[in-house]
Image 1: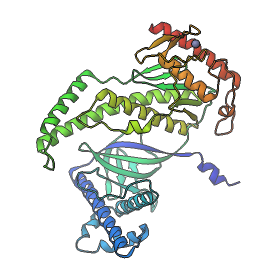
Image 2 (image 1 turned 60 degrees about the horizontal axis):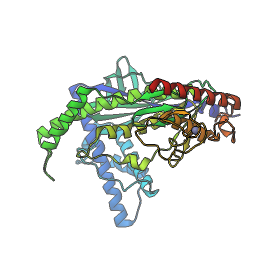
Image 3 (image 1 turned 90 degrees about the vertical axis):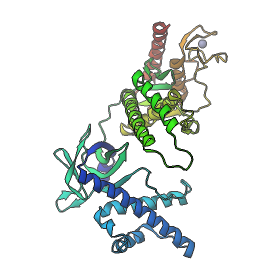
Length: 433
Ligand SMILES: [Zn+2]
């Protein structure tokens, strides 16, 4: 048996992001890195284009790396020597990846980068002598060209760092490290859950738990609206340069928005962690991705709608990666499945159900139903192939077996769970109405 391979499967990559506090000199060097990475990208993108047009030749990453070494000796690009060579190589690697994606028709043709774009550079970690190049010493992080270390603050200290990406956002410098770690121990719970995402209640679970959406502080919301108004007023005319006053308010707006977004993220983290930890199978709706990707323009900016859309995305993203991390299973139902209109007790389809009706009584079996919880139970049933009549008859058994091959809970646990879900549902109805 290949032992090494077995050890590797238990590994997982995760990211740790941190705020950096560079000195003035370090800040200048970081900015030089941003500029050099951009310049290397643009120079070599141009090289690829010219070679293709002149000789129909596709130059690859290794050839471009060799060329980089030659180019560094020229007068024009001598300054590339002042920054980390690994950062420049990784820019070439990114360029190569962009072309691979383009040839696979997964992305558009790579674009030239200009000054105002997202500024970032990354470099890999490796052993140099007996020390890793990227490492933590005290309250400082050390990496290529920053041997004296940059002060940082983060919630988690990164271990086994594989690579680092330094970037600028809203005028602040951040870094994110890709780390390698062991998967956390899996504790099977034998439970399955259905979840329904909504604008009114962010997440409703089939066990009757309801999680509210993230509420923005009234003061912050007021401020945000004021900034938007000022931004609209100072908006530069077409092709005109933005004024300093416009840039100043844009920065303020960006900072406040970042606060709101991170608050919402934290709120969702708490919800998704609880859901993934307590259940082995998570059933949810397959969201309409296309519709959700439509970003609202600034003029038609509708905060509630925008945040709700972003929240759905975030809930799904977090559940997906956390489930992967904990080896839990996710099942999706089709978008066409009308989860809210079906009574989970008897399968009656209520076509007269209005969007504002939060609670309803089934005209067929008189069951009292909470709109979102009922939907989540239907999602659970659909995914687990219970029939919607609710007598817990299991048609397929595949779901009870986990990816690791261990059986998780019997049919009996599942039906018991479903019964308890129904009890919860009624309780919920009483509580609310
Ligand atoms: Zn019914």
